[in-house]
Length: 275
Image (cartoon, rainbow, N blue to C red; front, side, top):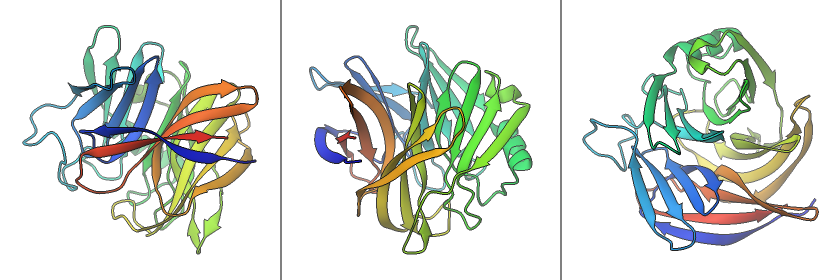
């Protein structure tokens, strides 16, 4: 299976991009150290900043210890869902942004993440939610296994309300190892009957501290069985953290992906990934 990357857009004003969602001509982007949801118009190349967190001293380049660590941007119906990673107790918010009304609703995921850790036997140092899919009646959360316990896998939650979750299941997913480091999830989306994910390897055993980037990958899981279909490297040095579906041409799938460069520079490069 072949894949290739090309630059799709360069967006000034966004740093540390970690999630994407494409809706018609609007590309929504989140950053893990920002209090904004960004809306980039692909036609006129304008950038709209939507404030989703209030009361902070700074809204962009929030210090690492204080940042909400929004790693997840997913969609269902007319709402976007933005989730914190849960990797510290400051990173347990979910923001619901209603696309039609522009309403911003804040939810606490403290209780959910406590239930996930208990049900899935994931300790505080190994919870790191990097992707999510919401079907309307089921949630799939993708835990990045870059902690010392290598808890890479899919957390399935039955029900539409994450704050009232009761039925929680964990399926470990072993991807690849590179330089003895586990390749682990950084985002995922649902397309037809398959889950397409991106993943990365870093030279670290911490969900908090970054390490040397050892490569990024794309792969897919069967949406019903969660069996692994394939995993393929797409870059040796870049760390991709967000993916959204772009278009399909015959048997060719095209996605947009964003790169987290872990810098304070407010510029993001969006790439087109062809599989």
